[in-house]
Length: 585
Image 1 (cartoon, rainbow, N blue to C red):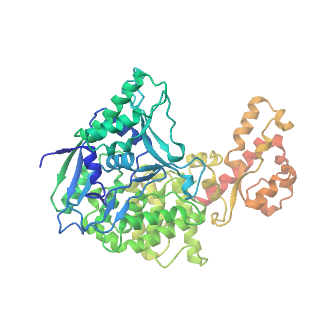
Image 2 (image 1 turned 45 degrees about the horizontal axis):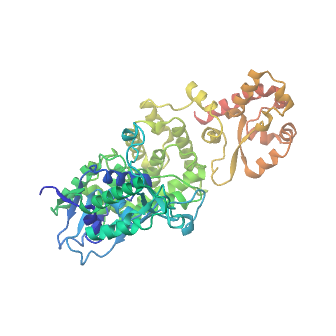
Image 3 (image 1 turned 180 degrees about the horizontal axis):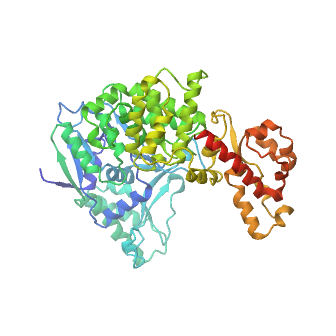
């Protein structure tokens, strides 16, 4: 069937009455400025790309999860409303390509966009007032400068205004709520609306403004009611695999629809035991917001875990998600979910969270190992759990520090999975075998001059990973701690007489060294507060020998004087260097 054309008014009236969204679609993600640019393109008569619809037959319409278009968008993210009952809908049609544009039209003409106030949190409606789309009908849409046409700026003066802060009309501006144009069901209704609005003009409006008003309002009426602005193709084949392939091809080239979202859509279309979209997105929210520490894990991480933990090809390609693969993931999902949650909780107990976990993919080998041993949490105090938790922590931290998952991560995941699979019978986390495999792949492992230099030159506040390796403790996520400057930062300021006496180049050297690993330690919160309340030399001399050994503080007390700071750093880096050799051997 050839492409068809319709007006915007006709198509918008079909949204949520005939046209709905399939579960494979993502959420509405456009920002207010994108909605404005779309309406500007419509007013200027620009093509807004074609649309792809899928018309279901009566016997197939109740086989698919369908969602309503959102008419109440939110700057924090907008979820579509699920439409549970497709019955009574004439020619049920699902939108495969174009939902962001169609949702934007619905919001601009019939809906609202809620924008959170700065520094306002919580779910109170007043924190996110509703904004509606207006057009300044007095504004001349001609380019304001020579570069505007090529700068992606709108010509027409659209703007979102809240109900509580509606724009004030004057002799220079006449703001018109865009959705009111829908009342102009014929030319006579348009003329009545135009005349009624002109009667409201404030005194002093110039003839030029009146003419501009009439041109802009007429153009809006033409664009919404009369222009065949929507060009669309209707797919009527009922073979879902064919339609899914069409959807993937239509959307995969887009910059905002990620491959992970397409893969989630494929799971959603096939799972029968639960609604994959709600289940997985809810799980991601739990991982990020409901565990003891906040995390920042995404859909791509979950999809990769699904591939690795179900022994599927690791390569992150849509073709790997065959019907059999999707069925395997569905069957294994309860154990996959459990392993992922245990792994994230374990990483949190190590002190890793959204602030310092530099690669989520580094957790996947640990999740695979945890998946192999479903009856163990590795947070308990049995000898087996403690021993292997320490090994997992050490491997994870060094993998993050050495940027193992910064390149060729798919191959790293495939190879580490093979090593873990080979060692499953032993039951122990194969720390040495994994490092041997990474070394074979030319990744840095052990303690090399390059690793030594990189670790010792780590600076605050990014020093948690190398710093925590030197301690025998490993549950830094359980005990609140802070990265503390051994020589307090307050000493490296002009109001310190000893600092003032240093030559300028030595002052800068001291400042640079003050933030390096050699001047950092991990202290519990209470201990750090007590330290801040005392002069440094007095405080450090009040610590016993066990404290100094635990934090690798040089024994030579003369190094505690501010003037010997460089020597203190050199001595402590030697102690840290020896500790790294021991830990990374």
